[in-house]
Length: 248
Length: 140
Image (cartoon, rainbow over all chains, first blue to last red; front, side):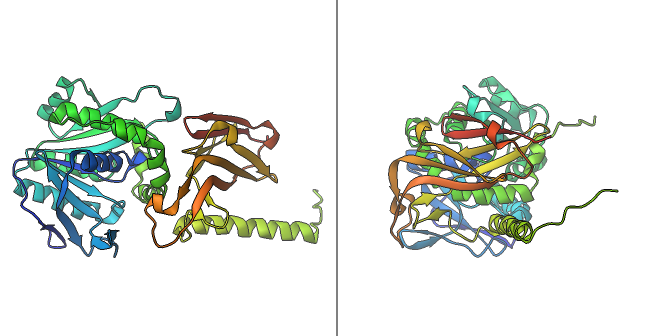
């Protein structure tokens, strides 16, 4: 594990769990889904990321300091979540450290929760979820659950690093991407990604409360979305809209 | 040979203030130093974006907690829009997790600059599931 990034464990971390990632990204799909998982499943914080590569920022909860990137656990899952967008220039070291840590805990699989922006999102009646994977076996797992494959395209951000590293040295990884707004918080897309996550992991997550609180979440999440927009612009997230040129 | 019309002093001052306003908006967007809410006016600033196509400018604004009938879109001069919408209920700062100061909000409100010349009087406005979409034809 990189010395610049340390994962500090606060509690015993269960081995052999599925490692999930929910980071601020398009539509804040990952972080909204992660936040709902923590609340709905009563996950507890077991570890956090400590790194001087990150901005000098702490998150205050009930007057006490917390890292902006924390890991929650229970129900045979480990969930890494960030309350602030990960700065573009430190995505690699942070994600490498989290992946290595996951491997040291014998994580059986890694799943990133995210979104894929579509134009005219407000007119979409049903939101589709797509999957990309680190190996043909992991891809088949998603296909067998009826999840459509994102066959061609570009992926930018933390989930890209997860797929790349997992393809090189495991454990298998999946990225689940629900159709969403690019620049606006999208609780409906977060609910969709959680439904598909349930098919893969067997986790039963009720999304009714998430949908009920959708408008409240959209009001609360404006500032994180705005910060995320700035970071997405730096990492050239708009490249995900590009028409792929497959070089065989 | 073209004859340039001499600009009046008020044109020059207007242009100067327009430049200044544009610069201030860009600066604020870059650094985001001010809060996205205004306690004095009881307003929250919504997320919004502008897209310029060859034929029109498309503005979208995220207006959660609002109803269509309360949405107001007002052109300000030829280059700006003022958008506001009343929220279904008042939201207190502590509802949003802010406890170090007190205040409540009842409106979403913002100003948007339109980056190219448009026909403001031909605006087409749609509102669906809390997303306001405004289409404004470009001037040819």
